[in-house]
Length: 85
Image (cartoon, rainbow, N blue to C red):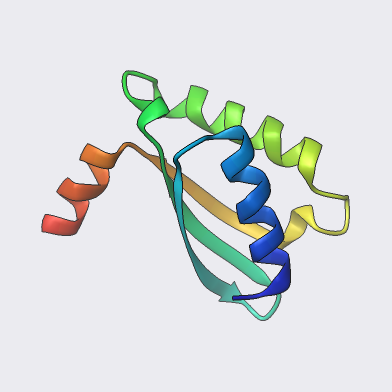
């Protein structure tokens, strides 16, 4: 795993205890992924994204932030359903 992603994953796990994050390369130096967290249960998608991106804004430098193309936010149940097809 990319050094940047290891650092970012560790930081996100500090803020979102128990979360799982799956990353994919979106472009040469950009990444996308899915963050799965029980804490998102009952929360609208827009609120999840606002919480996530406020955290990313605090944790990432202005040079690092553009490396994140997209990070979807899902509950474990939503992810299980998505994996079932």
